[in-house]
Image 1 (cartoon, helix red, strand yellow):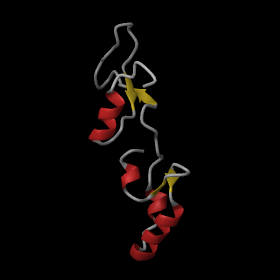
Image 2 (cartoon, one colour):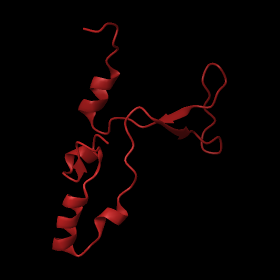
Image 3 (tube, helix red, strand yellow):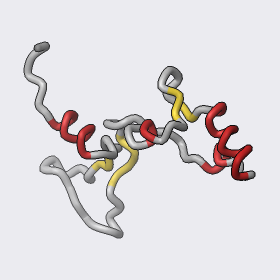
Image 4 (spheres, helix red, strand yellow):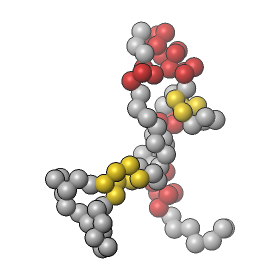
Length: 88
């Protein structure tokens, strides 16, 4: 979501692809980009696990290693990595 939000194609209120903006692109290019856009995923969501066939990584508890959506640019990831220990 973080990288997509910088494209101008995301509606910040609905946090989804903007049909209005993709329609403008379609008028100019003749390409229905809306139909080609992937599902938007919020940073921090678990989206799967590392497949054992690729790499057998396990946590200390023996569980498979989760794959988590990250903030897709460096600033978003840096902010998310700051440990929050208080409300301030």
